[in-house]
Image 1 (cartoon, rainbow, N blue to C red):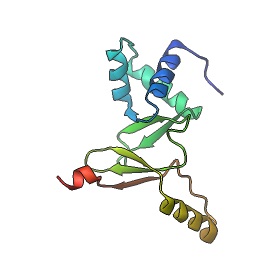
Image 2: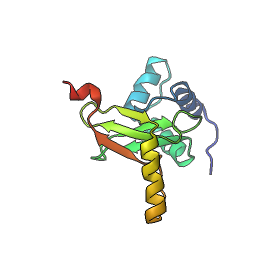
Image 3: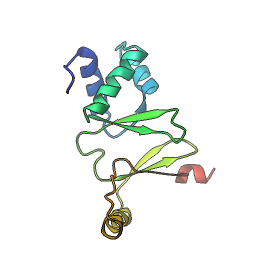
Length: 133
């Protein structure tokens, strides 16, 4: 059941649409909003994020240790039909369109009868920036 439009919800929606190509932790969202003069408490941010996730407006990515989640706007074209690469050193989440990974998804469907949900896949490793350090 979609949530009513409240001021807090509108503030969060605007934040996500203005930053549609990025992902944020709840703490980063709270800080960014506070710096813009929008005072939303931690509990309010978490509660509204949960509803936005339930409504399919925002996507949640959970870290391997399940201690930190990050959130990204699910609307528009910013996060459709691509894969996510997460750096285990710096924590960056990269968005990658890749024909080879598309072929892998097609192979899994054709040969194993399993449909891959590309929105949920996160491939973990070390990014180029961190591998040279």
